[in-house]
Image 1: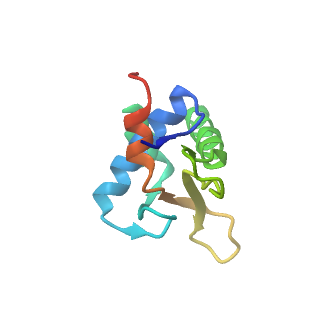
Image 2: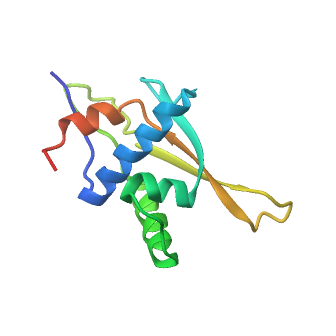
Length: 126
């Protein structure tokens, strides 16, 4: 059987778990590769609350933004005999602006790969 995983820190995996839960609740499917993924539009604060369970400080929001950026750079690793496999990103993040100048980024669009539940299931117990 093919093993699906990413090389990520414990914080990144916890964030992926929170993002998948939030995106699953939205029921919005998005084409992220072989398996359909989920999309969510949320605020930084709501994502932080889902991840850590409490209200964020400014410093905590900076940690979230950095962790989200690191997770967006992670590629899905499928350990199989497929020689032509091109690794996909586990998430795609876009900042949404509420003003015409594009300076007020109050919402975040996150597309989460359909591989996320398989990745989370394959990780060692946390």
